[in-house]
Length: 327
Image 1 (cartoon, rainbow, N blue to C red):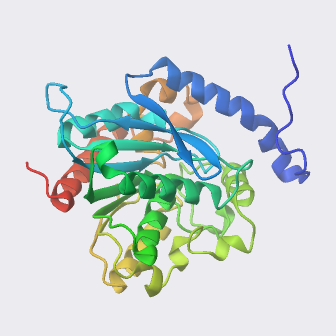
Image 2: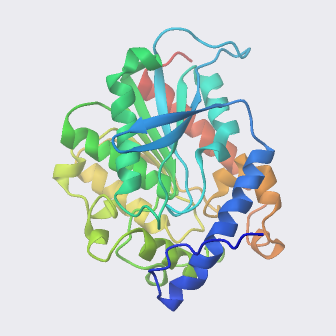
Image 3: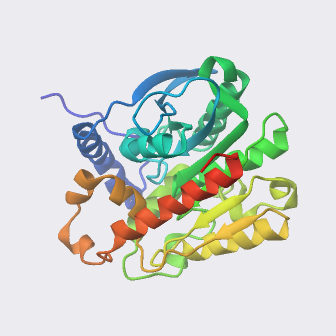
């Protein structure tokens, strides 16, 4: 068997090297779990300037599964994983549900991952997909006047940064942003944040932080949205923010909600009490969750699937209102 090429050999920091050496195997294991439950979503190659990524395009459906014709509203969805793990396919089931429940297109974006592609690669990919599809709305069958973004954890960072860019660039309009347990403060390292009894390991979160962006870049509002000011936030899309109650990212989610409100952005915030970081994605990926260690599972509220259902229903209700959808 050929020896696996070492990932980012130029990084020699011993505190990061162990994580980097494990990362390819973690990715391969996660991909295997996702492919075992692969659904019929259409994964398509997507060309952006100087690179190619892929998207999972879940077309708007009727309740009986028939595809809706004509230009439909669209939700752009960004997966979590610390900017280093995960893919759009892991929430296929959830995206298909939203496409059917709401009759809208849902686009899962496979943005480039760090550390091979550090900041701002993921930011450019996330906004680049929205901009290109908006400019070619008729080709894709989307309504450019009814677009929204949603993300989980690091994906929520990309969603809210896309909402900032939409305002600053003035070339497109978003009607809603939905942020599940968002990662919004990269200036403070994990050990500096308030902890709860089922947080992710500090060393993993620290690796995510240090390998995604430099110390200087972490002061950018595109890496740490809690540092965004009125120039970035005023006029941004209305936000639904759903921090997890037992997550070290909860406080920054609440702080960001305050910042948005101070800048005149309509905000709905609901702390999902008792929930662990990633609970929505865990509920959407039963096979992957089954592979989670028993020690980790013991820290999770057994009702997390019920709470995830509540979070998705809130998200769908928010989208119905902001996208002007029929009930």
